[in-house]
Image (cartoon, rainbow, N blue to C red; front, side, top):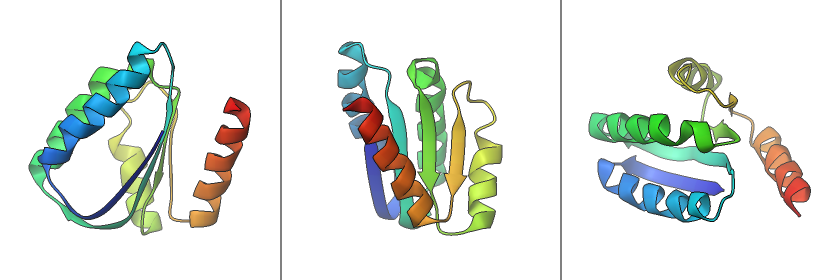
Amino acid sequence: MLFTYGGHLTADVVPFVDASVDRVLKAGLRPRFFVDLEQVSSYDSEYRQAIKAWGLRVDREVAGWFFLVRSRLVAMGVTFSTMWAQSPVKATAERSEFEAELQAAARRGA
């Protein structure tokens, strides 16, 4: 599943993410998430708390997480802050790496 975000994130987006993923999980699929955060300018602490709580809830049903962020420092921060995850987590600041992983996942799923 690909999620692409931009601008300022608020907790209002989390119910949309939850509903979208819930449909996939109810279909018996084990998704791998690709989260494009490259165009995010900022986020509320409520968003961070809500998305982390959601992530903790669904993590056991997820095949992995891959984040695209603006900087290598943020990529390291994402990886560190997701040490709670039991499924694989990777973050990169390189769009080409993110796109290559996304295309490889699409080929495996086809």
